[in-house]
Every structure is written in C-alpha cells, then in structure tokens.
Amino acid sequence: MSIFLKLIAAAFYVMIFQNLIFNGGYGISEAIRMSAKPRQLVPMALFMTYFGAVVSTICVLLDSISVIHSFNEILHALLFMGVLLLTYVATMAVVLIYGKVSPRTVRRIGIAAFNTLVLAIPFINYRSAFSVVEAIGAGLGAGIAYVIAVLLINNGLKRLDMNKTIPPCFKGTPSVFIYTAILSLAFIGISGTSVFI
Amino acid sequence: MSDNSRTFRRIRNSALIKNPLLFEAIGLCPVVAIAHSLKLSVFLAVVTAIELIVCEVLASLLLKNVRRYWRVALYAVFGVGVIFPIMIFTNRFFPDLTINFGIYLPLMAVNSLIALHCERVAVKNTVKDSLIDALSASLSYGAVTIIVGFLRELFANGSIGGISVNMPVTFSALATPFGGFLIIGFAAAGLKAFIMKKYPDKSPDRAFDTSEIRRSLRGSLKELMKDDFDPYGDGVNETESAFIRVRKERKLKAEQTEFNTKEIATDTETEETVKQKSKKQKVKKEKIKKEKVSKIKKQKETPRREPRIRPENERTYLDDFSDMLSELEDYKSRTETETENIDGGDEE
Image 1 (cartoon, rainbow over the protein chains, first blue to last red):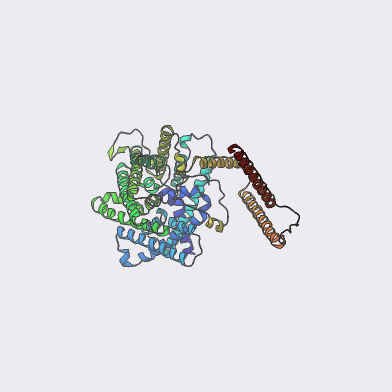
Image 2 (spheres, one colour):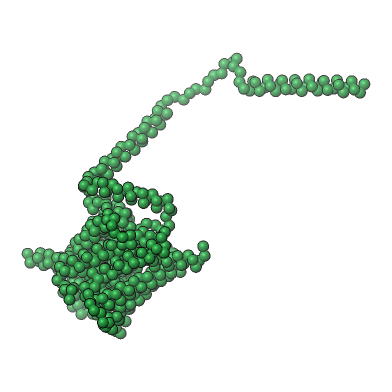
C-alpha cells in the first residue's frame, strides 16, 4: 500500500504541486504546438510517458550503484543523456524489427523522446533523491502533466480563435502566450510560491 | 533575383516573420525558466547560438543521407557534444552561472530549436545556406531572449545587469515562468504589429498553424496512429501558390461558420456523420466498379460481327473512281486528237 501511495504522491508532485510544464517550463514548446494539433495527443502522450518512466527508472537504478552515485553533476547529466539515447535506440530497434507501425509513427517517437520534459525527469529524481517507485510515479505524472497542459492550452486556443474582439496583432501566438502565462500563474499559486512580495 | 536579396529575404523571414521564439513557439523552455536577468539571458543567447551553428553545419555536412528517425537522435548527440564542453568551462570559470542555470544547461542539448532548424533547413540545403539560417535564427532568438531578460530583471528586481535602478515598484512574479510568458506574449504582439505595418502581405500566423484546432480529441488510437503529424513542420508552406492559399482560407472560413452554427452538436455526432459520409462514398465507388466490370463482361460475351458480304451488283467508291479515271483518259485522248487536227490544218 505504501508503495502505491509513494507512486501516487510522486505523480501528483510532478503533475500538480510542481507542474513541470507550467512551473518549470519543461516541454512547453511541445505542449503549445501540440495544443494546435490535438488529435495527435494520445500517441504523443503515451510515448512521452513511456520514455519518461523508463528513462527515470533506469537512471535511478543506475544511481544506486555506488560508483555512479559518486559522479558529479556533469557526469550525471552525461549518464542521463546516454540512457535516453540508448532507450531510444532500443525502442526504435524493437519497433523497426517487430512492430508494424507506420513510418509517421516512427518519426513521432523521436520527437516524444528528445525533449526537455523527458530529460528533466531523471534530473528531478536525482535532486529529490527519489526511489525506484517514486521515479516511476514521476515518469507517469510527467506524461499526465503533459496531457493536462495540452488540454488546457487547447481549450483556451479554441476560445481565443473564436473571439473576434481580440486586436489583430494579439491573434495567434501572442494571445496563446498571455493565456499560458495566466495558467502558469495559477499553477505557481497551487505550488505555494509567493509571487507578490 | 540576386544572391544578396535572396539572402536578405531568408534572414528577414527567419528573424522576423518566422521568429522561432515569438511566432513558432520553439525553444521556450530555457527562456521562460531562466532568462530572468540580463546576464543569464546573454549567456543563454550565446550558448544557443553556438549550439545552433555547430549542429546545423554538422547536420548539413553529415546527415543528408541518414534516415530521419536516426537523425533526431544524432541532433541530440551533437547537442551533447556542444553543451558538455560549455558546462565544464562554466563550471570552472563561472560557477555562479552553473548554479543559476541548474539543470537547464544540460537540457539545452535537446532544445527543440536545434532539432527543428536542422530538420527543416540543414539536411535539405548546402552548408552555406544552413550557416545563414543558423546565424539569422540565433540572432533573432538571442535578441528576444536578451530583451526578455532585461525587462524581467528591471521590473522584477529593479536592476539592470546587477546594478540596482531606483524603480518605484517591483513585481517579483515576473521572475517566474509567468513573467516569461507574459513578456514574450507582449513582445510577439509588438513584433506582429510591426510586421503588419511594414510587410502587410506577410503573415506571421502561418508559422503557427491552428487549422486543426477544432478537431475532436476523441477517436480510436488506430486512426490517430495513421494520421500525419509533424510538430516541427513548417505550418503552412511559405511558397505555396495564391490559389491554394485562397482555397485553404475559404475552407477554413466555411469550417468556422459551420462550427458557429453547430456549436450544440457534440463531437461524437460529427464523427458519426464523417463515418456515414465515408461509408456512402465507399458504396458509390463499389457501384461504379461493379458497373465497369459488368460492361467489360458484356462486351466479352457478345459475339463479334461477321464481315458483311457485299452483293455483286453493289457499287463501291473504287468502282466510281475507276469510272472517273477512264472518263478523264477519254477526254484527254479526244482533246489531243482535236489539237493535232487543228495544227495539221494550219501547216497546210
């Protein structure tokens, strides 16, 4: 039970209390661009969750080795990047050999793997000294955080697109950024950071 | 068109109309999170410029014949190759910068700006073109980053480059990602107003394609897997003809009007109608196919006509022609004898 609670707590931490996308800006470019093409959300979010969970778990397991644990931050960064690269190569090899996936989907895997959101998770695990269960929770939470961010921005984009009172120079990305700023402020409020002092 | 004007157009497009940060929403992560002071933003701009130039040149030189799914990984490898020496350098000589940057410096190895520009420009063009693109993109990205950092530091901390300015009020929330998004939003609006005034025929909206925004989020996973998706794509093509653009705009308008009138209709209903339409089309196609097949069968089944037997007394055009020839010959012989008679009479 405690393992399950740990997993949920880590997922909620990454998803809501310290939302990686709105509080940290990780993967915000992918989220904004995805919100304009919402039909692709499900596979993209699945791939991101997969890479996030797998990479963070492997990194935590490797970090439990004493030699690797004694590495400095630069070597840790190299290790995380290496694990991400190897995970991507292994996934691609499996997909290309056994999977009957369209070439478009294959291309999508690359975008889902190499982004700041996926690579940030092992760093957060390392800094927060997460266990394996918490690392899995963080990976899953990051995927859900991404879905939440895309849905919120997409909803706002729809309304902004329909609104005819917006001045022409604010139409498009300017209004999206200002709307995202308000969302970010809301999540900063949830995290408990004081911003008006 | 001369090379200089073409280069100028490319730089203008990359820096203004397709500004990566303001209109394409790419490479936002480090700017939003850490560009909250002038010093940090200048460092960020320099690191991004170095990374972009090196990666684009390498991609243009080495990755033209590599498959796309391996290229994406190799961009990250190039990024690591550039970022890690910088990390070691800053760690030794500017430790305060390393502390301020935190995990964002290694994360820049997978910056979406690098992947997009390498994929869109470097692997399709020469080294020179890639270099021009990298320079213009890094300049525009750096300029926006520095402006954002300057404004955030001024309004959040009341200082410029660490030197305090007597600001009557400071707004510390601008140092958070909220402030980053807000200032980027207003900067984008300002630049868009300038473009609309100076280049009225150019629209920066094309860099951020929102034509699919109202599509349903639901649908089977299988369908989604088959769809094309390229978040690093160009959006609407800059070089497309006016005719296609007008058609697309009309289609969009029609979709908008439909959406306004049918707001009450749920997403599932629209999906059902689409399915019904596709079914009807399929049935029509099958009918047409069947008709064609049956026609061909009929043609095969019907016996070929036997050649008609001409009755003996029937005249053909050949008979007429031979009659005409014989008449001509008679006429010629008659005229020749008449002339001979006339000539003979004269001589006598």
